[in-house]
Length: 290
Image (cartoon, helix red, strand yellow):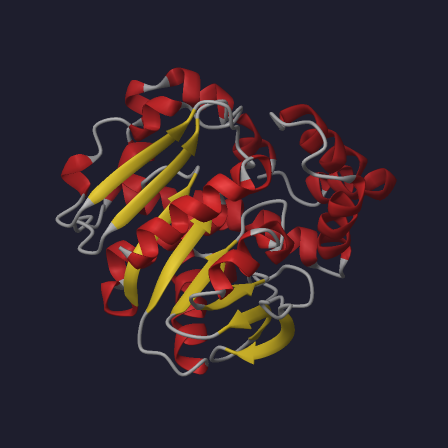
């Protein structure tokens, strides 16, 4: 029987992350998105820990992890640096990296910019930066779907609205956007709201979006070439995602110089790991051990 994950604070170089760690063997790092926490991986950790050492951190700013004060402390280079530091701190030179939503953005960045620390890559419902970069020109529908990314640029007000009434808005988002009612229980929502209610946590979580917008002009006017991803990559995509359209997964083959596969899940939405937990675990295991 796989032992339960232990909670451990890990110094990743300049700050500490609160992590769930289980299992033994090669390292797999699981990266959550917004507005979640490492709790999002509760159903995958036991399955993966039968074959791997699994580390699921609360990303910087979330829960009990450290919360640097400035917006640009949440630039994607720094988020990726945390993961590279976590891999080293746990005694590994490389890891397979799995990310969902914002964790997916960090995973893409590692695959593109830090292939030296990535063994295999898996991303769940998060667009490759080249695919998302086409949105303003080619995909006005997706631009409308992304309205919330613009809304949270307002200072302090989004934090108050999202935490008002014990996180009532967050809880409503989960209820209305899951494709399998009840897969995120009231107790699960409690865990997510608690992680974002820690002092400074909600501001830190929204600073991910604010830092991305501050970096956008440089990316548009002084773009860095985006290298092809050189490690085997799996993209899992719930087709009923209310926030990200399936079209973001099309025509991606040119972004890779290593094997790449997309698994479209027609009955899942954005919260795929919770809506289809057993299937996601099977897909990840097949990818990570192949």
